[in-house]
Length: 320
Image (cartoon, rainbow, N blue to C red):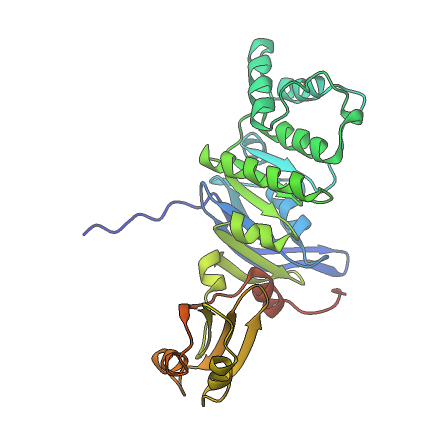
């Protein structure tokens, strides 16, 4: 049987260093992003996320390191890279006295699009970002959420293959964040590759299929979300859900040799049961619950939340 071909990465970073004076911002950074994926970039404040994004966007030169974007070197071929990416900084500067249409038209013209083409593209993008009918509004009159959408729309006027988004949901209310995440999912369905830096871990966990965690300028993890959240080692946690709350079953589990912890889950008659598989098997734990005559609804293995993985892989405090 022929093996599936691994696609060429949309982004490849190898041995990337960057320093501001005597402070090292990036230290031997390496990771890959594959086409048509949403790749999360996570790290504490000062971890090096924005510096790395600016290198990918050709706004900072590598010193040293090898960085290719869509097969092009970000230093030698920076104009070719810029033509194929869209970069949304964490605090985008906007021409607030312009209307939405004028703002997008200005950037479309900068990419060499003809007037008739610009008009069609801008209307399509406003539709995609749920801003149709707002083309004549002044940017200064828009809410923060709408301005973020226009900033994203500006990244799309030249139909880039790769989007580099630095904290695009920062400062947005919950509804605006959810709507922005839906737009990003639609862009991936359209074939875009998206590299998104964010502090909102819960949303990244459901949005991204791969993630890179950076801390103090060094990569702590880079790979699929599934691999990151999978539990490792001999200690595992299962979620036991009962039809009704049963203190006898809970106590029987606590008394079982090898069971390290039994935690009541707040939103129902359920328990997180953590045990050492070298001392007790999954079948043994389930047998204890059955023998205690608990009315079992489900018994399934839990996975870590992204927040837990993040805390495990990063150091406390502010980097110096």
